[in-house]
Length: 182
Image (tube, rainbow, N blue to C red; front, side):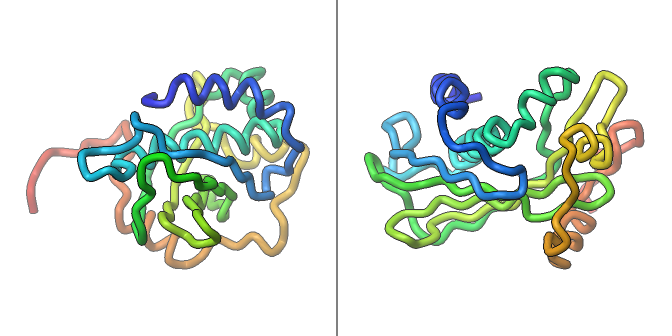
């Protein structure tokens, strides 16, 4: 992870911030550091994904999911992600990183994440994530049961997200995926 020291700081301080439900929005204040930017003076497109990792960790810690994950030795993984850029976050600029669960399907938990400055969305991303155990993927039903929560009735995965995931999915790891340009 490119932002290891930020992650350690976040893990150390997230417990002191207000608790959240896993279905609430996490907001993490940030500043664009010299290590985040590229030669154009703005946050590098790849760095956004590393910074978004921090937002998901903040939500997991503050909602108690992180403790359940550690107890069960589950590992979070991203299966797919898409990002849209509107404005550049530049060196030393303050912004917040907003993270919320967008919805769930039979396999994935989907996050919407945003970089927000001056009340405006600069960057928005959608992530398809899973939790893995030594036995394989952990079902969303098991995650919800271990957390003692139910999916809110108004949390419905947008149709475009389901289509995006279906249209971009690769075969599972146990199936062949030959390298052929079509």
